[in-house]
View (cartoon, rainbow, N blue to C red):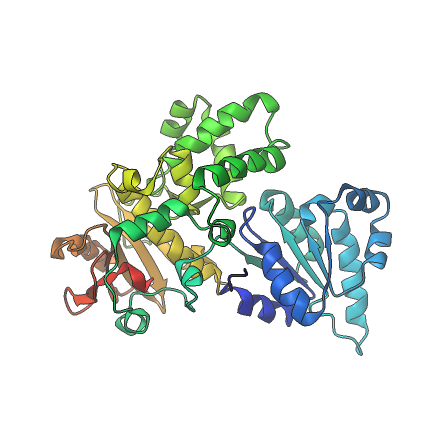
Length: 414
């Protein structure tokens, strides 16, 4: 079974514009499946994976021979194992560009899971020649088979997205506990514990072992679990390092690894010269709520729902769903999504900056959060950028006006 991905349109768009398209993202989110089920079949691409050690040996010995043997258009999977190819791909692309009778767009599609290894090499070798896309786990819309757009809390957007049914808190937490990895939705027989146990082992074995010393693996796993229980919170390196029994330098290095490999997302704080006394630390969000729940040692969705962790993981689910709607359109969420907190403890969970306007959002697990839930929106009025429509994403069953600019927004609208 193939679950249609909303990023497919952007992949096709990039193929028409760039000679090389690089698709990165965490392991097992479906990069290879998207390409093999759509691009390879429809457009007739050849395919080779660098997971094969014999293929990797050929690349080490003679990268140009490899590229001559596997003709374009070509999909190269797990390109991080063959970074020696990148300068030669540049030569082939530039040579094709010199021929006015041949178009170079869509010659190579590369995929890779180890972004921290690849991006420097890609930037150096393929600058201006490669379009880069990120892919993460399934969105709720993809699971439900519905098309999505980058989220914005305007009434027109919400009206188009609104589905006339009452969300069930138990169903939402089952989704949160299950996570977003495609394999869990294709094969319902796999339990979350079975899947994520294997996932963590694979991540440590294939992505982390070369980056940290073997004796640090247990510490890294402890660190990973400590990050998971802090999802939805500010990143305070001193506290994280202390509870993980590592120094601050190591904590910063390992956070960088987690972010680069797509395990976590760091949401930056919003600031400008007119907003004073802000806290500049980012907030941590695990990009897969199922993995966060597994690492935090929750055994089922019901236990999760009634736990002290429920508010933070609910917020994580909402924020990461919104992040993925931007990524799937090929947009950089770092340019659009922020949060706000100041030294007076005023906080806005999410701020979307679109069309030179601020769209504030609060996130509440409640069905009826009350009008006080938007009181902190007032602190944004000091910004020179106007405050536009916003709202509270919650478990309400219909769109309900709070005031002239803000609404209670059902979680189904994201």
